[in-house]
Length: 128
Image 1: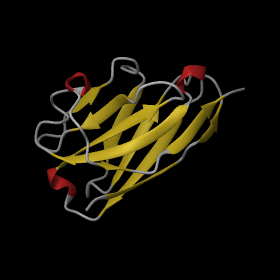
Image 2: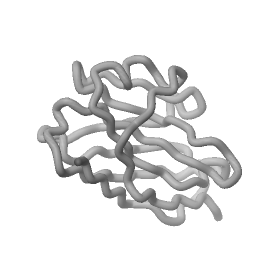
Image 3: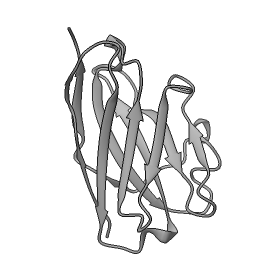
Image 4: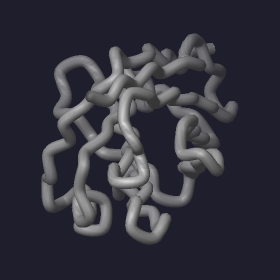
């Protein structure tokens, strides 16, 4: 069983950068793809970025491509999300998610692969 805990949300100024962390535990995450998603009120959940366990490659959601980065520590315990140029429409609950798979991330978010484990989410509000 994988446990995921996000941190770092809160109020962000427009144009500023966001940094979130996801602390993972409960399993050997070497076999898990890890991703960041977000969901704004009244909107569908949206994939932002993921890291593939097979080769460390990343895939990006179309709406945030070029503004978002994801990193993992060497032990694959803490996964960070960084996003530049925050906009009002980036206001959402941000989630960290995991799935035991060798293809979930590399297929890309458009494929819609289901992630099995989710954190509780952290609210990010972009406002001046």
